[in-house]
Amino acid sequence: MQSIKAALSKPFAKLIAKRINKWASQPIETQEKVFQNLIKEAKNTVFGKDHKFNTIQSYEDFKKQVPVRDYEALRPYVERVVNGEENILWNGKPIYFAKTSGTTSGAKYIPITKESMPTHVEAARNAILMYIHETGNAKFVDGKMIFLQGSPILEEKHGIKLGRLSGIVAHYVPKYLQKNRMPSLETNCIEDWETKVNAIVEETVNEDMSIISGIPSWVQMYFEKLIDKKGQKVGDIFKNFNLFIFGGVNYEPYRAKFENLIGRKVDSIELYPASEGFFAFQDKQDQKGMLLQLNSGIFYEFIEAEHFFDEYPNRVTIKDVKLGVNYVMIISTTAGLWAYNIGDTVEFTSLKPYRVIVSGRIKHFISAFGEHVIGKEVEQALKEATANTDITVNEFTVAPQINPSKGLPYHEWFIEFENEPKDEPEFICKLETSLQKQNSYYFDLIEGKVLRPLVITKIKKDGFQNYMKSIGKLGGQNKIPRLSNDRKIANKLNDLKLTK
Image 1 (cartoon, rainbow, N blue to C red):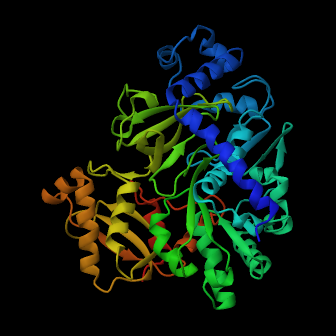
Image 2 (spheres, rainbow, N blue to C red):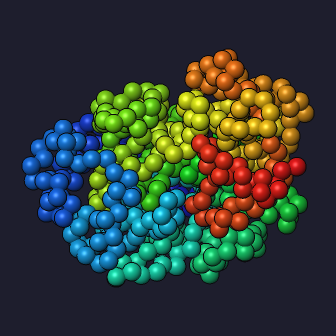
Image 3 (tube, helix red, strand yellow):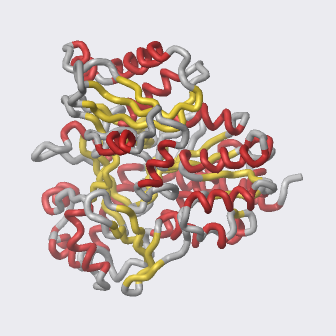
């Protein structure tokens, strides 16, 4: 029998879907309103005065007066906010800092304001409601829900609380979900990831879990520990588990492995959250891509990735984007980030409405020889090479080998197999064929004998987890880059003697 909560969720989902469809059907107007509101609200901030926001009448004015910045370029302003000053990037002070690990100079402090915080929570909620509206499936709201996330324990700096984004969001779980939510607060506060996952297994193994959410690589660890404990597939342990919610990485490389661990197919919802904003979520089960959140206090710009490092790259709004082009996404937000490069690259899969997939990171690519290989291409190659086979892959990363001991340079694929290919040369051939088909630069380099075909280096079981542990990034929101333009990760994998 359906509960009152499940029954009520359906009309609420219908209402939310109607609101979303309204702004999604008026994308240009919606973004223009967001843009004008951002400029108006921030014109008296230090940043607004420095960039003459009071004279900005149009997007063209904005482009002339506000250059694209990454965190390092914005740091002088952020540090003033961190030190307790008000009205620097946005009115007043932030209510939180999302603390992330910077790649170049230590911790990064991303401001979250009273205006931006609700958009994080609403987008996550709306993703589930859109699923209910589309499928009519609301039974799962009566079961237990687990969200594998960072610790909700927050520090404080000059009166502003700080912590991991997932830990901050944990404080905003709606009351009607509190009874269903797992793990317990005590377990969620455990800092060591392996200890935490073991505790989560103990707490959940005998519960009626219906929704499981988290970054696929860390959910995989949870699933494997469940199976070790019970000797059953996850779908048999949790009979009513039928919705997997994930974000942070492409699910496709993990799909076959997950279906094997679960023992059956389950529906999934992809999210695109980040400390800087909640950008998109999957709104349709039968459509590729995630609905770009145009009404969440975020103004979007895009620069073609191929021209991003030009002296004067062209910046465009959603009005001028094209399907299938790899763009660097630039954002301005109600958290006080202005023409900010978050480092992600996206491609549009639909323009009516605007849907995107995350294609990689502008810093995560291989172009040691001018090949411009991106994350989406290696993931697609792996998907095609494993299709209709028993091959399953736990984790992988790719790096260039520029100075091999003999022969031509090549791309080295570090792969941790669950089930290895029976015919490795055929598997390599499929990877090669797919990459060459997707990337003409790579094809030309192989044809021109500048590069030789890729080489696979096999990694022992749990090798990538051990690597992440060795660099202090096991669990939470951390994930392995799909590819690198240098040998830093590759050398570490070899140094740790993880290869067979």
